[in-house]
Length: 127
Image 1 (cartoon, one colour):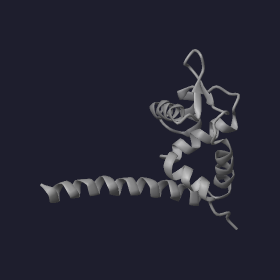
Image 2 (cartoon, helix red, strand yellow):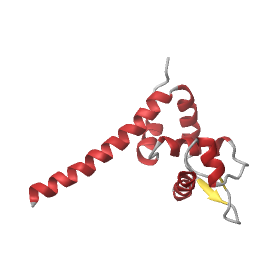
Image 3 (cartoon, one colour):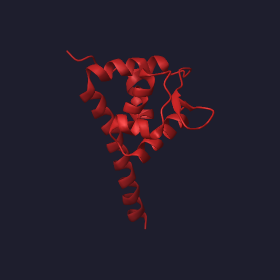
Image 4 (cartoon, helix red, strand yellow):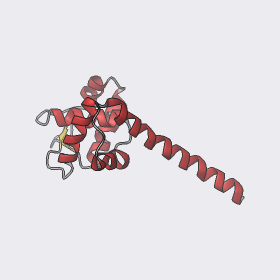
């Protein structure tokens, strides 16, 4: 039986997780908190292109979920984040229920695409 996604985890995913690669990067850094990651190492582990590895790390830093080393060449999990408990719960849910979590992420992406398209429809009607 799959565990339902708790409200706080659902809110975090809908407001903060823009893609499955972002979630995978977040969980990878969280699973190895003492390890420094370069964009190319992260990309290799996630099976994505190196530029996406760099973009994901930048997004994690912007979200306060990762920090860069003093030399700016590696990034690591920001264990001091206030969201640690929610992210720990998300990691457990994701390991048991990949489909529901990824569907939730995709629903966010679909909603944003509809909002974007609707903005064009409104402009056409106004014009």
